[in-house]
Image 1 (cartoon, one colour):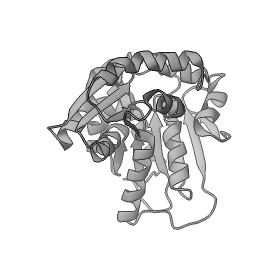
Image 2: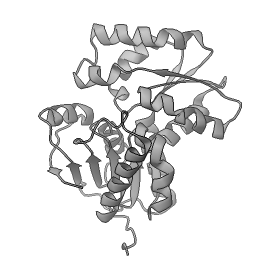
Image 3: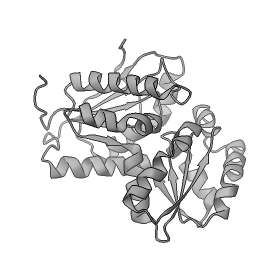
Length: 270
């Protein structure tokens, strides 16, 4: 039997790889005194090419690992995991569970004034139709246009955040989006916040961008406050990072995503 959560317990954040560190970064900025544990399944990434059963199994494994670390909240920072397994994790977890899709969808519905919303993401996330379902649950009358952008993840991991090739790629992907009557564009992948300045440049004043990482940090802050679970300590927080493999580039890519040095990386076998 797990001990009841305490306000001093950490927030658990997990992802299939490194992308969820943009969520950790948003949490660090929004909740500077909260302890955070991050889990990246770097040995088994990418998840997008795996079966639904496999993704669900891996997701449950990681959620259980984090609950064993006494986290007070779980945040599913991977869109693929959230699309496939968020409901399963909620059903079995003993702590609140937030996910990037639900947070991004809520924010998009709140900021859209015409009811036309675009979503960009990896092919796996777009094919799952999870954002459209989440948006339609909140408002069935809203129109959702989805566009897969498979090249953005490798470009971000290469560090080409403000590169002419990335800008050209964005212009090509967004051409069909601009034809649709939308006023809001959801960044449906945790890698995309790193190219937000470039995307803002490409969309100009056409639409607002919804960053799911910022959305979920706000949602986490509200939930901790309303439930009385915010950490009362104002000491320097403890950040821990667990991975299933330590690829050569993990440190450098991770620090780019996090915007600060990446310490306390521990490799674990599930």
